[in-house]
Length: 227
Image (cartoon, rainbow, N blue to C red):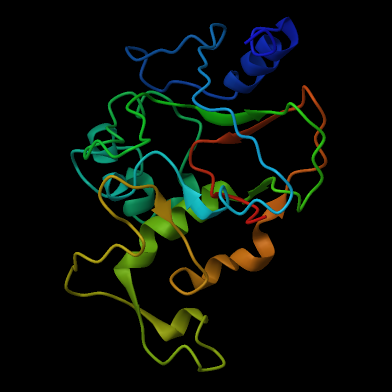
């Protein structure tokens, strides 16, 4: 707790919060007053496979498509309207009305979290049970939101199965949301989200030392080494 309250950490949090802005002046945020909490202490021994996590996004799964979830704040409206290039992941006013835990899942959070973060207490190199992140998170967000609206025309074994003309928009809406489950995080995989190229785009954070602070945006896909 002393490390989390250190002036340098608070300064870093204020800097990170400054990237956010509010379009709605009736829903302002206070970027100079960070609020954080420590929800766990993660200790891994060499070879420990108990805390590995595949690529996923916290903050709800089905809720991202539901009117009563993120739709309550119109967070992803630009993406759903076909204007994904205009999606602003740092617009905060829309997030305040969003509901990310409609199903009260274990480990879910009901508050708006701008970021998630790790405060390191040891030296850890890439591949030693540490964190992997997906850097182009805004485009990845647009992809995993729109992907359930399309269907594959030919088989996955087809050489050009990732090409745009091999996918078609579903004329009739379906209730299928790949890897989304009520009360869970949104899981992503090579099989269900092939265009993300997760095996190549997920990158390790650099070597961390005691006191290093690693932070990622709330929409970011992240994973944890299996060992």
